[in-house]
Amino acid sequence: MTAYIPVLALMGVAAAIGTIVLLLTTFLGPHRPNKKKMSVYECGVPPIGDARRRVSVKFYLVAILFLLFDVEAIFFFPWAVVYKKYLLINAFILFEMLFFVAILLVGYVYILKKGALEWD
Amino acid sequence: MLSEFRSLAIISPELMLFATAILTLLADISSRAKATARGRDGSETSSYETRPHLVAAVALLGLAAALILSFRTFSMAPTEVFSRALSIDPVSQFFKTLLIFAGIITVLQGSMSREIHRTEKAELHALLVLGTLGMCIMTSAVHFLLLFLAYEMVGITGYVLAAFKRRSGLSSEAGVKLFVHGSLTTILFAIGIVMLYGIGKSFNILDIRGQLAGAAVHTGYLWVAFGLIFIALAGRLAVFPFHFLAPDIIEGSPSPVSAYFCVSSTIAAMAFALRLCIHIFSVKGDLKWVHLPGFEWPDLITGVAAVTMTIGNLTALYQTNLKRLIGYSCIAQIGYILMGIPVLTHAGIAAVLFSLATYGIVTLGTFFVIQMVTDHAGSEKITILRGLVWRNPYEGVALCIFLLSLAGLPPLVGFVGRFYVLGVVVREKLYWLSIVAAINWVLGLTYYLSMIRQVFASDRLAPGERSQPVMAANPVAQFTLAVLLLPTIVLGIYWDPLMNYITRSLGAVVW
Image 1 (cartoon, rainbow over the protein chains, first blue to last red):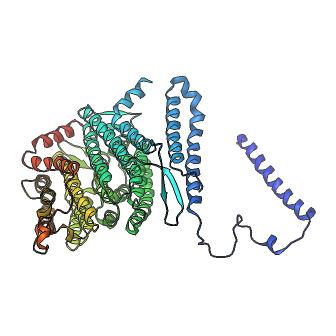
Image 2 (cartoon, chains in turn orange, yellow):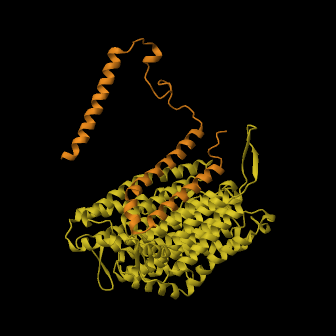
Image 3 (cartoon, rainbow over the protein chains, first blue to last red):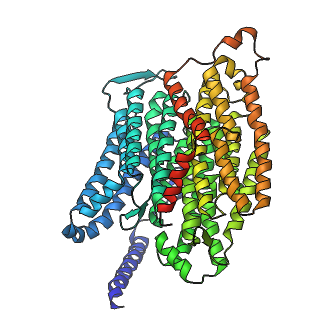
């Protein structure tokens, strides 16, 4: 149980910082509201209107490619955790990852050559 | 180190398939020449020149190498590699050879298809090869984690392949339907696996089997686990409650992909269904397997088989779209093949393997001719077959032979497979099922013969049309047709070698 005390402390500190910052800005910050400022924040997109606007397909392409290469990184974490332990047994684990990275590289070269990363 | 590399040598067909997919994509981008195309709005886009011939050659050579490698592991003693995750046995290698062969034919079809633009061929080939790779792993995986990954690999490549004709509404519809259905069944499959894990305390099929045979497990629990995994498979197999999807997908997808779904997907799913039914939910007896005491799953499969073939045949009767018609006939064929599983004898499983192999070859042939005709006619109506045998005699006769084999007429291979399956059903005294199958045999004849009548019909053709070929002779296509015709006819007369091989493989596996 004692192992969880640092976690609890971290949660406490996080909650305290959040509360303090909010209170400070409320009491100390200047208040000059206008209509634009008070509107709902929606990541830079107008919050009211038809949600089915046409968006260029290029955005989706970039998003999907980003997602692919980003998700691959997840595979590196468990690998890195056990890497040292298994390297002592044999080098197969190293070759496995090199192989995996080589495949990723092929994918990268493919999208590069296909022009998927060119905006125009 | 050594053991891993030894294991790698044993799965060389799979590695070869993987290398093929990568090399196909690399061949596609190997050209340095830029090609500029002018868009409809006048804007110029430049991309690298594609090399469809090089791409097809790489894919086909790779698949051929994989086929040879799988032949080499054909008669190996059953082994389990990679911490007992993959079981390499004669039966799994048999399935693999079939799948890779189907891969070769579908890739060849893809390279000839007019539905697919030349810049997109490489991706089609690579996806077909990757899907085949996933299926190959599915046939020999005995660890549920690996099996799940392979199932997903087949699924995800399938979604893309079904929607490959981007500009066709039907193709997009097929892709979306497959995606929605696939993601749902994947969840059910995962829950089914977890339930089996709850019983067997292991993801390994061999361990689960030991646990199931030893402990008395509540029957309701087994039904839920079996049902969930069966639902996941039923979509792929296109059997009764989940067959609605299959014709839509087969109609919407480009023809090579339709053939891939009809043949490869079904073979892989059947391989896994066998593993599920025999390997997990049955206990080994002498000369026969016995289902787990109190858990009467064979009754369910028997019912499903009977309903599947009846519905498939009845619905096929009033189809006017050629691909859709073949889709329903595939459902009916799967129904026939499925009859061999619940009898749980060696002869029954041998009949399933035999008729599955022959079903694959014959259906590939049918789709091959149909693709050639639909590509040239630009339509998929059944009437485009009209007078084919007079206008393109070779292709017309080939199509007739394939259709007669699907209908189960002697002396073609379809008859032999069906005779074996019906034989084991009768021997197990499932008379009602054999009567249903016999009625379906006749029902099937109706629409297969009506297709053949179209092929021979010349009365509606204009006078000059009869001697005018629909399509130019293509030597590669004719050679491929000959390769597919050969087993259809030869195995129909002399089927002993294949049947003996299957019986021997079944005897060798530890199942």
